[in-house]
Length: 95
Image 1: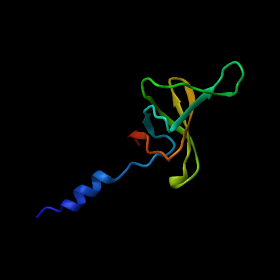
Image 2: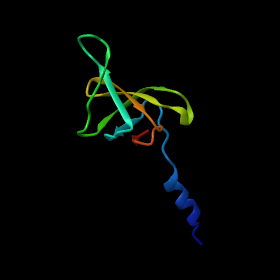
Image 3: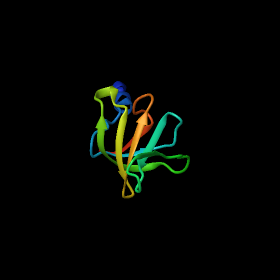
Image 4: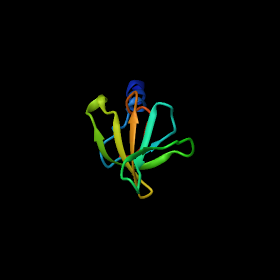
């Protein structure tokens, strides 16, 4: 006899985001994306509506479900992603 519960619970498991995880971030009004201005060195907001950002998580601020900021390294730049409602908009591609 098949155990359907175990199959169903495997689908519901979310992959945890940790440092070194490859992720994809889709544009969302709940996300704030910033990068460092090369001339001034300050963080600058990015008006981002195009393709998703795919990158490696290099730093996280917070713990457990309280993580609200993630630093990504993508295309030779570091991006700071700030969320309003946790990391639900960030898709894990590879752990």
